[in-house]
Length: 187
Image (cartoon, rainbow, N blue to C red; front, side):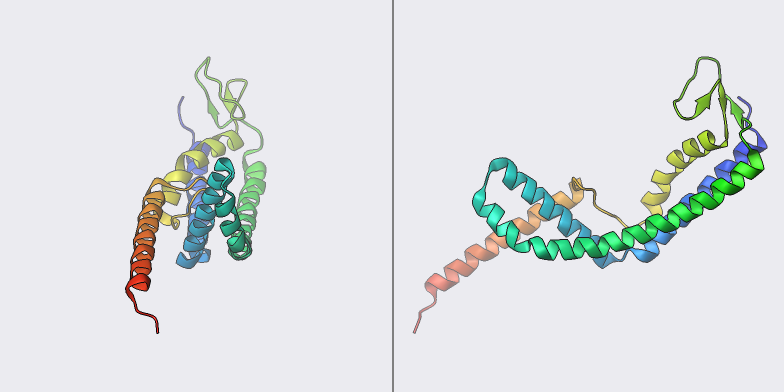
């Protein structure tokens, strides 16, 4: 499978699009937004856990924070929508240019018997299939290095450890506070 000039151009373009999207995300999403997203993710984890265990007391406690969590989620959702719209604009500008420049002619030929859905058509790869492959290959490393750390819906191992440490600290503080209240004379 010899690589063509068109394939190299598409690799460079997908790199540029990936870097521009990551830089855009880094500029728009602040550290405070990342903390808010982590807090919202932790809230959702606690809510799912309490619902699964049918812990009414915890569910009531979490219900009190619901409005605050919804506010911070709305704020970060707005910023994520801006990023998504800008990313789509960049992609469609590329797509329009690529269709006029490459057409639907194949950029690469695949070895016989190798088939990748949405990428390979009749043993050949057009520009969109090649872009899809290169964008997927480059987006993760680019985002890892250039974008701020954003939590997933299910949380991350690192943040889960930090949360458990925070809970332990809060638990110890509340125990210490209770001891002080018991030992402090009232009067």
